[in-house]
Amino acid sequence: MCEPSPACSLNEALGEDIQSHTFKFILALVQRYDIILIQEVRDADLSAVKTLMNKLNSPSKETYSYIVSDPLGHSTYKERYLFVYRDSKVSVVNSYLYNDGSEKTGHDIFSRDPFVVKFSLPYSAICDFIIIPQHTSPSSAVKEIDALYDVFLDAKTKLGTDNMLIMGDLNADCSYVKPSDWAYIRLRKDNKFQWLIPDSADTTSAITTNCAYDRIIAVGSEMNNAVIDGSAGIYNFSKVFNFNNKMTLAVSDHYPVEVSLGTA
Image 1 (cartoon, rainbow, N blue to C red):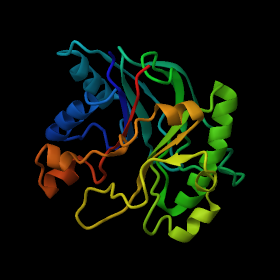
Image 2: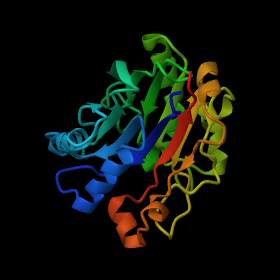
Image 3: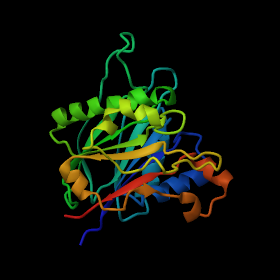
């Protein structure tokens, strides 16, 4: 019998200057999941990504592939969205970069446009679904999270399914999204969107913060049926790897959020 298919979102500044112990941790983390979204990838020539993939594939019976966005951002500071996935379980069906308009016209809402990817998981309880990744800008988090509703509608039309996971560092808590802001966010007002990481969660790894910045949102009847009850949560790598706070923050100031999908 096939095991459940786990997916994860990690905020990690992957780039050429990444430390060796951080790189080893990312390797171990990627191998834990069938699909992992890595945000905040600052790797202009993809050299760090290629090193990661070479290290993943060289010693392992399992092979992994990746799909990555172009560098995204309004300024000279750019980030990529990177998906790494296990070949034996997952394949990419289609992908596109959502275009929310020109910055010059004032219609460009997202700091980093969502890189929408449709995956096939033939051995899971849901054969095809879409992941919409998003790393919001803290100053515009409310506006960007609300606009993900439009991305959902666009992806549904373009890729032919409403079964999706919306995930990433949404900055969806504390001073960036206050309780009073939820009334203006369509993803929250529409109950077909299931917020799998609750407001009470702490997805930050620093001991000085307690915020549910990182989220996973499920939508679509097949997707909601496929999500294994109780599987969504935070992967506290500090405890698993016995990291102190300094080592933890050297890896990321966010904990990964994860969810598992049932088998066929």
